[in-house]
Image (cartoon, rainbow, N blue to C red):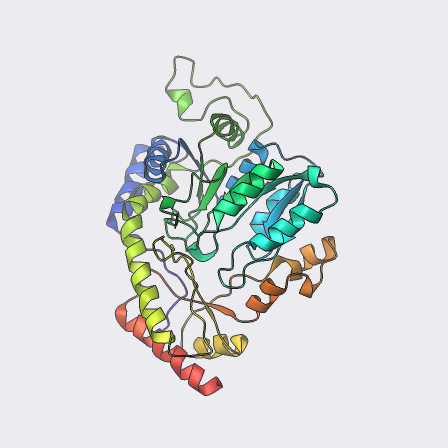
Length: 384
């Protein structure tokens, strides 16, 4: 039986050659390739600063540090996200306040967000909102920006899924105070492991640059490009080890050149899926808020009847699937830590019981797409 994995990175000879060049140069940790990748990325996004890190989780941690999150502070986080969005808040002994999601877009629910801000007893402790652009669909940022201004909150955008997502014609990455991208192996831009932080704020960028590498006053590469001895550095803060190596940046340099082509391929797959599944009344295809904006289609999330059985049957046919996500309020740590109940977030739990992500990646072949469509239709007819 032919197996179709859920995701495969799209790397070719250009990436291989760049990695080999780094290996031959002897500079395999943070160096000239990282600097080049950062310069290219900030130009692509249109941000003043782009700072490469070893993961999006690291990036979110650094972002919260940059805005000054402290113990007992609160950060509003959508409950339908990967755990890293919330766990970085706990690194500061601060607390996430979970927010329900929109039932169609899977993004943070503006009505629920307003309710939290209107009713939370210690409003002065809420310092930030972390909207997550799920699957590549942009959050509705205008009302979030308005609320942030009204309540004097910072906005940290989790854009792990959102390259090259746009909101009202503008690439995500310069809308909030700080934006964080993921370049994990399954993402729309892949460096194996890695991430990027973008911001237009000079002070945030300066702090992030220091904290991502042990609190050094200058990057490792900079130490070899100044008049001071290369061995000399000053520690000005207790930082972290979050820097991206050149080997990873070597992949990113060439992946970035392909991002728009990758997007067109993903969009074309999504269009085929949409067309095929619209005739199945009990299946809901991804909701696109604005047809004029780019939904990055990092994920293609269907709502299906008998979700668990659907996934089981697709697995029998060799089709890889996943679920994005198990809501955090039913995960043991978060449930027990904050005494949460399953029905506290009705949209998130109702969606969770129905959602299933299909393969959508640039190496997916036409015959594989056709096979996935055929398999979904066969299972649908069997179950309904």
